Image (cartoon, rainbow, N blue to C red; front, side):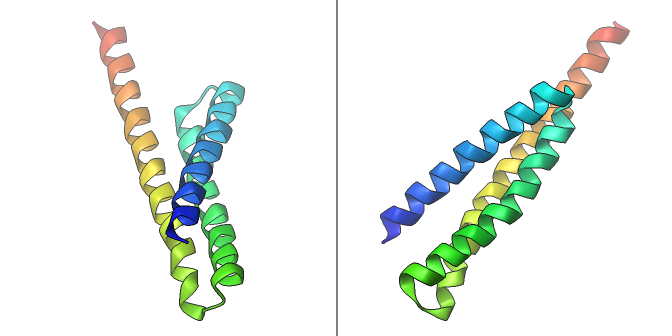
Length: 96
């Protein structure tokens, strides 16, 4: 059962990053991509929680879905830190 949720976490991370990349290409903003991934973290956490609830049929199974959301939040934070780093490097290179 745990292998299913590990695969689910990996699948949702890949899907959210692909959608974030499409958002970046469309709007040319890393901050927009990070915000898109943050919104997808909430969506995929709820989907993961519902899947866990239907598969395991235990009220505490919702925490498996929240674990999916936790990893997606960490992923969103990493993208946001990369966006801040890129902005700082661009500003530093333009001024010098």
